[in-house]
Amino acid sequence: MAILGLLSERPLHGYELQQAYQGDLVPHSQVNIGQIYTTLERLERDGFVTHERVAQPARPDKKVYGLTGKGREELHRWLSTPAPIGLDLRNEAFLKVGLARRLSHIDAAELVATERRACFERLAEVSRAKAQAEQDGEPLAKVMLLELAELRLEAFLNWLERCTERIREEKKR
Image (cartoon, rainbow, N blue to C red; front, side, top):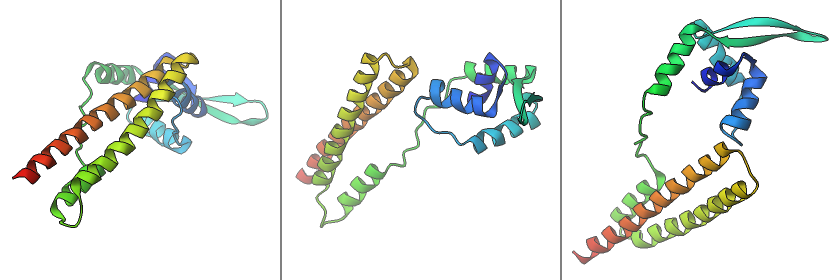
């Protein structure tokens, strides 16, 4: 869908799509150029994009991709539909806490405290990066992505605090 969105602005070739994704849309991310071309092939097969060959002096022709009417409709449908809320609850820290509660030779409260310290450190790093990005006038997309990371870490810290409280209650019983 990101490719459809980028192509809705203007026709692009694979390298331009990679640069637009990594630079503007999701700053500092990495997307494999092979993945882009594989996705473009699938989108073309499904009728969402089409391409034309553009001759280049002293270089092989390049394929420039553009959005079809069907592609615009699909992009509009996707953009107007709420994103699924990610509730994949597989989480390594959760697994560790669960095991620590079962294993008598492991202090579950200490394990949670270790996770909290690491999370606080990561939150401080992300908060500094966000403040620096705002100060440097970085693109809004980067600031918003760092803010999302910051809020997720804060939520995780809240969950870890709840774990500490519940483990204390469990020990009292």
